[in-house]
Length: 524
Image (cartoon, one colour):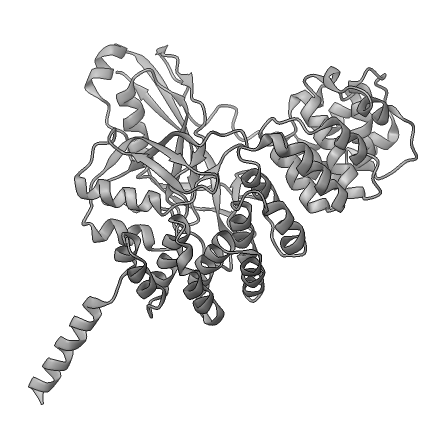
């Protein structure tokens, strides 16, 4: 009996050893292996196989993906199968993917929308036919992906979206253009400020206020004439924007009880939160006082800052241009760690990788040679990055560029995608969003060469923008301000990658928060 049990256990172990794993599927090169992964009883392995098909454009797997998606019970695997079908398949496949997505929580439609945006030329038609009535909440991201780097399509896209009278799509397109400093077509904007839909007019007016506050002379006829044309009173939030535009175009500034009352409302709080001085310069003195009195928080508890001022000679840093895209991107939870652990990779690393991607965000070329690490870690990291779908930071971004990669020794890469029941949102701390709190701060090593060059008493700052994940770890580090010493920048980034946090919170739930972190190097 004991021998029989031992034999069964041995056979079971051998059988399990023959089963594909997520890590082995991520490195797979043949359709047969990927097919086996798609039919694995392990959900992460199925998800990985579908992701490999997506990033390597393995269209021959579409029949198996259709089959698996029709009966899929796991949300993570379903999300990757939906992505693959929507990006690689034909119009019927997109329709089928949308039907399956509707069976899952609303955030699944965001993944569907992202895949459709990456298709390119037919994405706008598919938005109108498939996504317009969906539960997607990522309209800005959709249009940024769709127009990357096709900014020349903006007039056509803007005309069609406005013609659909789709306020969500219109607001997303305006946000995309504003964030990318791309001017919307004057003719389309002229039409948009006169449409019947309140939300479209309101969004257009405030896009113009914020976009042209620095140089209102750039607003030309017929848009200028349309903005100055007398009209019946409408909603306060829209009409106050029109009043600011009138002033921007040379009109007299004068106090009005209607505006003073509006500026004390909750609507104004929501609209003008963190408004730039470029816009506030067009307020009257009385309007400015109303906003200041409503927003300012005076505290008598402490008259000095919590941190001591820096002393000694300051060494100036320099601003750093943003990367063209985000790499690595979020992967199914556990996949990145599985790939790294399967390679027995415990190295730390910090450096700049060079990458080239296609219009869908698939990695086509990758150079990790400038980053010091072992060969097994380099291979594992390359696999993780090639499993990613790059997302642009601007619709003007290039398809090639550098990205910063930093990882503390034996640390997670911190790129787990949230479960399909939760939306992927990048938020800035402030207002209702409770900021992250440092749990573990790692002090950077002070490179000896840089210390000698700086001299005693000098100090220099390194500032990085990071995403503090809902799990409390640091990902997507990018330099905002660098020191003139490469070793110091590297030491700061490596240290920041090891910090841990109590995550930011919104409505009592942890969320991903964009957070700036500053490291001070002071020579004693």
